[in-house]
Image (cartoon, rainbow, N blue to C red; front, side, top):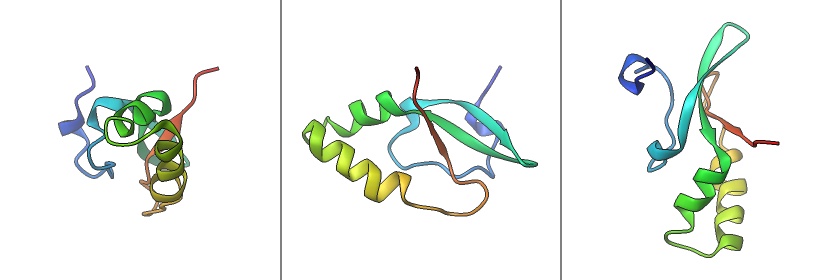
Length: 76
């Protein structure tokens, strides 16, 4: 069973723990995977939907912190 404590080397997005859905493997590295809809819903606790999307694009998605940078999943 997946537990975040088993992956201490992976970068986490602050305050978005509820949106973690798993770990992805990419080119020999791993990264946390977040559910984008859940991320936006968490952000909307403190801002409008438009502000949440803007905040996500500029402050979360646009932040590269190395090979363990989290990824964000959009369900089709």
